[in-house]
Image 1 (cartoon, helix red, strand yellow):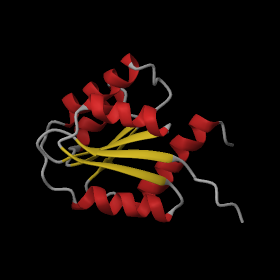
Image 2 (cartoon, helix red, strand yellow):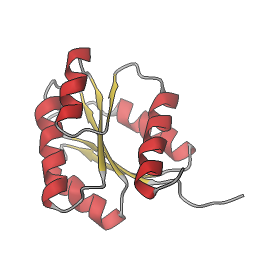
Image 3 (tube, one colour):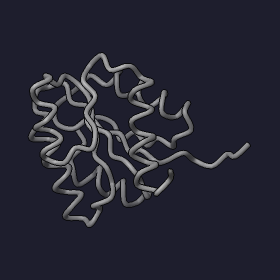
Image 4 (cartoon, helix red, strand yellow):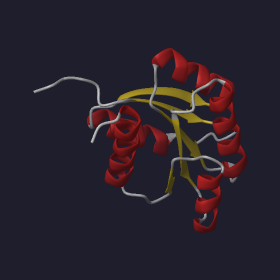
Length: 138
């Protein structure tokens, strides 16, 4: 049995969100599925998350946004990835996201969107698919 890391995921709570239970649960589910998870904590700026993604050779930056600023924050993180030359690092976002905002998030560059209530298995499978695509795994 292989013990290789399934992928590396940097998780962050941007902005003024102070509730991090959900992102910790997602992090544990990803870790249990074989991912290396780097949780940066609360109030993480885009520059900090991108620097961590570079340092950790991350496949994904995952954001949890509950404060209603998911569109602006996602756009900022995607733009910071591009500025840093991380065009192949996926930004995924979860949290309190109205259904009508999902296409807009995808339009600004989010690779996947996970509104509150998304089953953990769906999040894990989705992140696995993003990592496999980045790494060229069939």
